[in-house]
Amino acid sequence: MKLSDNYLKIVEWSNEDNCYVGSCPGLMLGGVHGADEAKVYKELCHVVEEWIQNYQEDGDKLPEATVGREFSGKFVVRVGADLHRLLYLKALGAGESLNSFCVDVLREGKKDSRKSKRRSPSALAHA
Image (cartoon, rainbow, N blue to C red; front, side, top):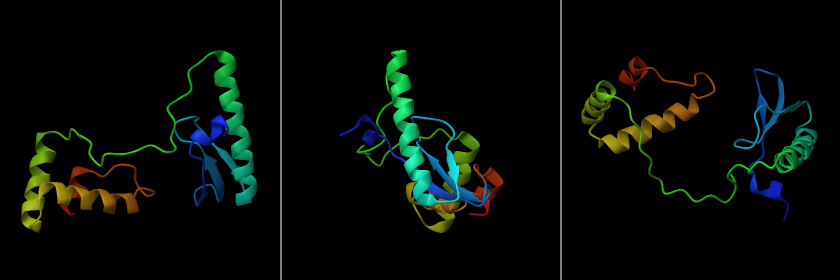
């Protein structure tokens, strides 16, 4: 197994760039671009190997692996009192627990994440 096998490599189509974009979250910023998905992946693998080599040559510790991680399904998010109250009221109105309501909002937000990285409190009010 190569060290690069510990890092998630993603190739996806970008409407904004009108090409495939390859990235390796957690290891490197930026990415590899191209019109051919397979070629972008091959180049991405090569670039990831170079990044790892640079880390090692500089004597820097490699970032935490992004492949094979286990997740508990829990995380804490600090939202502020006003947003907490708004979410609680929306959940109450929907007949859901606050947790279930927030999970639904997060799932819906994932679908819209390409359009906007952040949802405003007013957008949540309409959720």
